[in-house]
Amino acid sequence: MIRMKLATPLIAALLAFAVVPAAIAAEYTKGVVKKVDLRAGKVTVIHEELKNLDMPAMTMVFRTADDAMLETLKEGAEIEFVADRVAGKLTIIELK
Image (tube, rainbow, N blue to C red; front, side, top):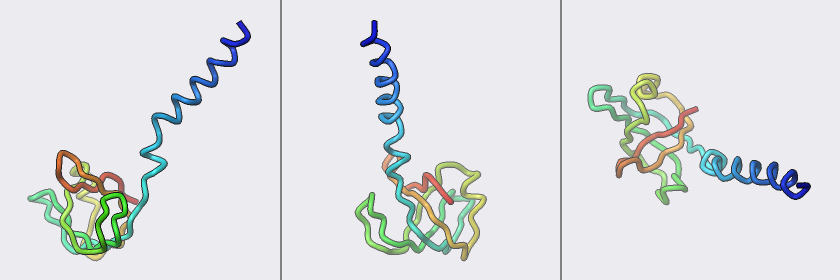
């Protein structure tokens, strides 16, 4: 009975940490919005190195995780973002 009382909180803690590694590992990249194309659902960003995608600093076109995120972006805005491949397309998945 004592072992079960000790094991339950330990298992709960391990499960909690197993769910959040992606959020902890998310590394934001700095960039500047060059162009926003609402019709195409894309944004062009001049960005620093994208370490998680193994890409050097360059100018790239991204999709955004949702339309609301795209609508907040303005040309010339300095942003910090997390990008990843979603269904094979480079996508901004988090934005500061």
